[in-house]
Image (tube, rainbow, N blue to C red; front, top):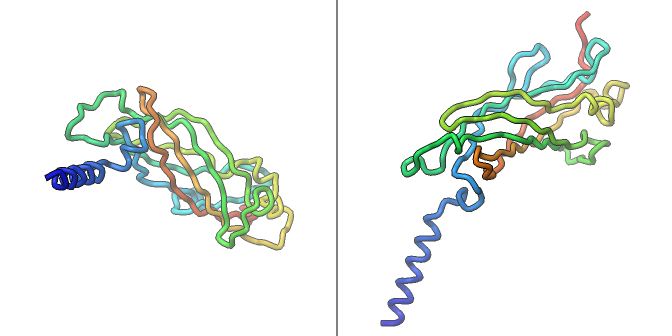
Length: 193
């Protein structure tokens, strides 16, 4: 009888552990962020699935931005009454770069990684779209992007920007970070006269 009780207890424990949502275990908030879209712009300024970065345009250096759309949801919408305390505040973006060929030394093969602070509120069951910097002006004045301006042997540099979005809910509980990636094509493209 004792073995049956122990076996029954183990089965209940296994069912309970498997019933837990993994996301709930790593988040302090009952809110999750869903990345709906992450888009760059092409050389004509039109929305694109990639970002085209001109390292110098008509003699000037500009940031290159991307757009992102998020939706906020609650983890368990059936048992919770939502309040504005569950709205999400995206407060930081971290961006790092890598190359498909495996050459990934910052400041030599790829631009330096960086963080940017911001304050964007995404309401529960609402969507929010905003722009953020992917390629900074300062990166175009450093290797390897500066080398493209100065006639490096590489004509076009393909980068993958790995982007992590950090957020908290209005009550201050951290939300599980959301990650996305964007292909970036960098070159000294011909400028219109």
